[in-house]
Image 1 (tube, rainbow, N blue to C red):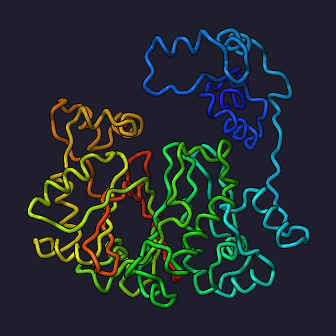
Image 2 (image 1 turned 90 degrees about the horizontal axis):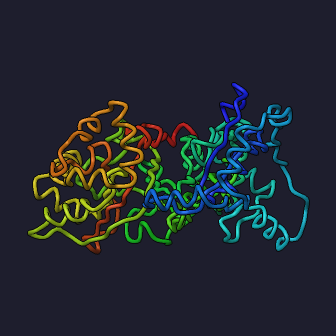
Image 3 (image 1 turned 90 degrees about the vertical axis):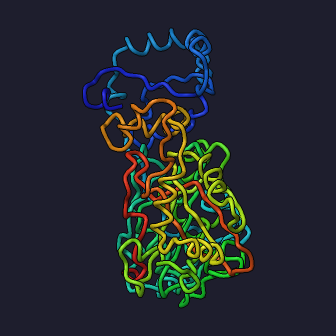
Length: 445
């Protein structure tokens, strides 16, 4: 689109046909509904040159015309005035909807893609006012900006709009500062990646006890209103305040992710942990309240530590995607077992994982995400990835860098359970740590 808008040069975006609705949506919101585009069949990944050639020699599956002929025609046809002028896109959203019965309003919210398709608490003016009483911030104060992917525009939202989504999720006003803090990160819980990520939310500090969050038995389960509704509010505000999250248009997760319903929201069990809590590791004081969000994809589960625990960890983590990082979520029993093995701090264990969990260079670079994204960082000279790129195929490379590894302790000590979630708090494009993933709750009281 830049070639056309800035230089007037005819250009064509070529996309896989599964992205047709998404492409139409992107060019529309960018004011160029007439942008020239063509499509090839899906999939493209792991196809041979000969197979890809049949795509070029065949028909565009969306336009139903010979692909090569259409490309030649569009590239030689001058841009007309309408194509160069573009159009505006209406971003206005009415503050109120027309009165109706509860059943009809629930249907309207579903049909408008404003829900997660579970029933919502209807956000009446009275309920929104009650939610706004949970913060000292003005209703019209801008909280932040969100977008589904880096390729879409940023949408701005206010305290009141966040309150609407908090009401819909069933949250209490006392939870609202946590929800506002999540909204302030600018990190969407409805990321549109085709690899189907979700989010994990971890709460630290005194706010955990103030609002009665669960950090004991069933901490990651459906047994606590604060855990359940804070995470759901984060999910709802993400889809509604970033301009949408509709499969095929603004969401392209191939399988989707069930974690997305309440964003795996829980509190760290700081009192039962032998280590510093997560927010203190990130530079906050113990008496400060924070909320942290991580991208997550899936998880591996195990119990306790045995004589072969080193081999277990290497097998458990070594098979994960090196691009994505790992978050170790441990019951206090397991954390104390690690402490008994000499890991006096989380950092000690993180360093051990970095040094000992390794994978051959050829396997490392055969990962789709490393091949696609980490390679970009390597080609830009970012270390250690630039050095990894020149490693011999049989050299053993660290699967994760220290800043890709996080440890959180939660649970009720009924079992030595722990899980490794493939995920991380990173600027994933350039593999750099970012502090945007953690926000002060106290600032939003």
